[in-house]
Length: 149
Image (cartoon, rainbow, N blue to C red; front, top):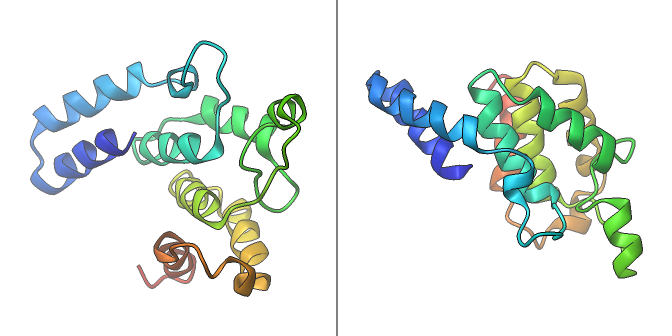
């Protein structure tokens, strides 16, 4: 997903259709299932957030968003893994600032401003609890929401 996003950004920068063709091929080949490690491995929000940001920038990704909403949505922000995976492994689920920030950037590119705003507000109220994470994606989200970027 990150490679596809970089290639698509090269297309936007250079207007070379070769980059667009490669990005479109990657977009067709990347699916929710392609982000599963192993046959029955779990799918994590981090991977899907990057996939949705890539696809969303290209005007695609509604199927990924539907999957995320159905399996990860926590009312204000999104959990890191599915409830089924957490229950089967007897582990907790967490709303992580890094994967939610990337997801919110994807939502913005798809015009889902209200949902991106909800994510932003969830972490803004609890920012001190997440200070140990890299804040670059969250800062970028706040800038985009406020018309700075």
